[in-house]
Length: 364
Image (cartoon, rainbow, N blue to C red; front, side, top):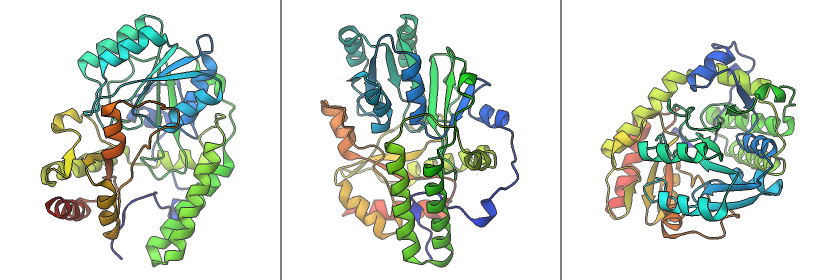
C-alpha cells in the first residue's frame, strides 16, 4: 500500500506502555522550557488558565490569523475579543497592532510565530514594549515549538504538542508570572484521550492491512474526540499515556527530519501563478516547522488532486467565528493558505511524490 501522507498519527501495539527514553525535565529542555511548565491535555486549556489568572481587565487582543480554539476559552469566560492585522508574509502588522492597543486597551495580547519562524528583531522590540507597559503577553509557539528564542519577551509561553508527536493529547503552559504548581492536581480528560487512542490505533491497523472500513471508523472517532474537546475548556492534566508517548519521542531526530523535508520542498517545488511560497527566504524558518505552508489560487482543486495521490494537506485554521472583520491580507491568508505535511513519518521519497503532484498541478 502506498504510504499516505498527512492526517492523524497511528498507534501500534508496541506503543502501549513502552519504556520512556527521557524524563519530563529532559523533554522540557528540548522545548527550551524550565521547571515552571505545566503539561496539559490540550493547548487551548492554557488559554483557559491564563484567562482565569488575569480577570481585572477582561479584554484580549488576538492576531487576525489565528485558531478558533485560541479565542474560545476567552469567549466562554466572558472576555471581550478584538484582533490586529497579520500581513500576507505572516508578520505582525505593527501599525494595526499599535492602533488596537490604543483604542481597545487590552489586558492580554496573544502572538503567534508561524510555521517554524521566530519573531523579527523589530517584532521583539514591540512585544517587549507592550509587556513593559503592564499588558500580559502570551506567545503561542504551537507552530514553532523547537524555536529557542521565546521566553524573555513573554509572560506566558503556550503550545500544542499532539500535532507534532504520536500522542493522543498534549499541550503546555510555561509562565514567568504565575506558579504552575498550583495546577498540579488536575484530572485527565479521559473521554477525549480514549477516543483519540482508539482512533489512532485503528489508523495503525488500517496501515497494516489496508481495510478502508478501519480508516473510516478512525476518522469518525477522531471527529468525536474533537467534538468532546470543543465542548469543554476546563484545564486537564496531560494523560499518563500521552506523557509516555512524548517521553518516547526522539525529539531532536524528529526535528531534523521535518527540517530536511521542509528544505527538500523549498528546493524542488515550483513557484507559479498557481502556487507560491509563504516564505520566499528559507532563512526565515529558524526551527523545525509544523508544516510547509503555501498559497494556492485554486486550493480546493489542489487539495483534491493531492488526496487522489494519498497526500492529505489540511487548511490548518478556518476563519474563527469571533473574527467579525477581516482585512484584505488576513482574508487572503484564510482563503489561500494550505499546509503540506512534512513530519517525521516521511522521508524524501514521500516529499518527491508531493512535489510531483504539486508541480504537475502548477503546470496545468
